[in-house]
Length: 459
Image (cartoon, rainbow, N blue to C red; front, side):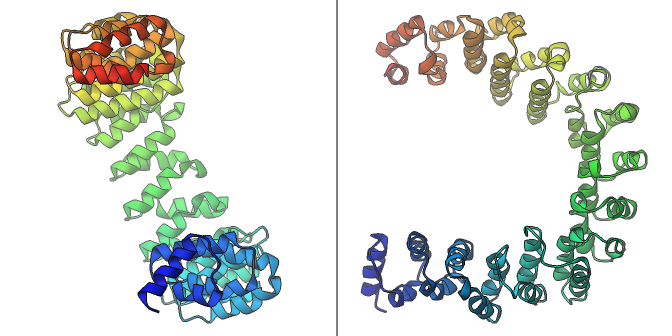
């Protein structure tokens, strides 16, 4: 087809004009934009079984967008399902075969089991994986336990290690007790061990126990990380916690802290973590939300890190303080407020900005933050205009909640950049009359940027 004809058809398609089906089929695959227009066009038309031929082609180009259109046609023409699915199953193109599980999921289709078995035995990993994954989404799984066991055996007999791994999607669906999990845990393939470890939340208690017994010291870090992150599904924490807290992976140690940090029986173990060489591990302590732990472990840790030359660590401490403060008001009032307010005068701009933002958020949450008035007073009148600039977020929230007048002070600042930043941060919907009057006065400022910002604010 010549370029001119293609352009003409594309223009008609974009204008939602009617185009004969045989012409539409000629447009498939020319470019992605045309494919998108074809799919949009088909989605707007009433379901028609004659559209299945073009949908078959579009599966090669945009399968995820085409599948819903085909399923809609199946709903209106159920008699077309068997022939169309049969054709896809015999396709030489794996992308078309890969679409089959999604197309037949939860629909009336007599050959459902045979189609799924064929996909599960496909030599292409993507097809087998898509079929295994689809089983989880069935309202009623089409296979009984004995059939599922046979499916797992077939997957395990595949020459492809990746296809063997797809059994991890099927095993949790089996209600009977099987030997599959223990067999996988003793496999030399780390991919198979990792695949089953990722399914811990969906496995039964017996299979989970086998995984934690066999894999808690696995040589592959990702597998141990998987176990540590799913500890809420494990029993025998007395054995696992000391093991994970001494693991060679900082990520495993940090995850273990996050899991047990608020539990009374593990507090003594946490005291040893303060001297851990990994910042990732020590940072996990900052998220522990126990008053006694904060007093004996976390506050000394924050004090020791406040002087670190690495400002990114201070910023991460600040983020942890913000998280803990939003979860537990008592921690903020007893321990964290002092550290948070101190960051308003940090020597690094990024830390000060984040601190001001966090203060602004917490002021809106807790009325007692009026106690911070002297600290906000100090930073908004700092000798350093850079500190005054970064105080704006905190000052604006303080004014809104506690009816103070820091905004007016900042709008009267001798440094134009302070005025400008304040104007850019003010919400016009919350301005009182006196603030609006000050902003209007700045519309005649000698500084062009201040003048423009003021005019934008007052409209």
